[in-house]
Image (cartoon, rainbow, N blue to C red):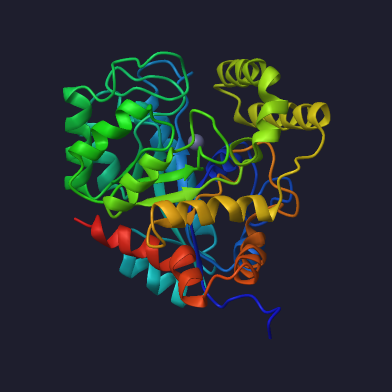
Amino acid sequence: MESQSPATLVADLHCDTVLELQGGAAIAHNPEGHVDLPRLKAGRVGLQLFAAFVSASLPEGRAFAEANALLDLMDRACQEHPEALVRARTAEEVERAAGDGKTAAVPAVESGYAIEGDLRNLEALANRGIRAMTLTHARHLPWAASSGEPGDGPGGLTAFGREVVRAMNGLGVLVDVSHVHERTFWDVVRTAKRPFIASHSCAAALCPMERNLTDDQLRAVGGAGGLVGVNFFPAFLDRRYLAKRGASMEALFARHERIERETLDDPARRNAEMRRLAREARAAMGPPEAGVDTLCDHLEHVARLAGEDAVAFGSDFDGVSDLPLGISGCDAFPAILLRLRERGWSDASLRKLAWDNVLRVLRANER
Ligand SMILES: [Zn+2]
């Protein structure tokens, strides 16, 4: 009995699996990636936010079209596998799909670059069903500063950036602060009228890097009724891994961006080269020392600072080059929940983390 995993469904706030699909992988079976249908089922994943990632390497004028092309791929995957994957928009639709034993696929966008500085594009994306958008990725936008490059770009959110946040609130698109600069974060706190999320971020107190959230930020997300989805990437979880990676981090990122630029019209080649880059990085650094317990440390830190109503999963599956030891994909959730129970979490707290918190915030952002 004790060894049985808690019987809760799982919601995950971020994956980049659509890039796998764009590169030619099939969601029915993708052992080289982190997410596929058999493992969604094994992981009891009732809700997955699928991000359409729009790279800043795309020339201006292609970003909005790219977001739509990726969302089309997501739609097609749902059409091809109606027995397992169902497009969902509202919390009610999510519950219906999950109740039928399927995974509710909720589309999202990674990077406000996708709207090309035009609120009409945001509205079009909202009308086709996206429920979340990260304001930035790793580069500054003209209207929002990112944590991913030096300086503070436009200095946080500009007047237009605040308009974007207010429009997202009105359209039922969750404002996602993962990747943003700290100044952008505090501008969101002052501007947002609905609970916002950090879909795939970790705790800076445990692993100090610019993309992770400080304790003050964690408290602010909780205070706003929002969510922090904890990212599974060892470099965000484990300061030893971060230190080992440190020297090569910039070179890796530069190569990453070069691959993106050079493969804009060849996503299959992009995926193959990204895999090779990940293999080389892993070979150079050795396996991560971070394991399931390291991930649990972050979940517990977030629950303590932001509150147990504000903690969630934000795996970043198919978007990261490595995972903690013992985790190879989305079938790992039951083992993670089991480990948390062994560490003293009640079944009620586990259900909040895994499911209830996400459904509540989706509902709080419905039109
Ligand atoms: Zn990301």
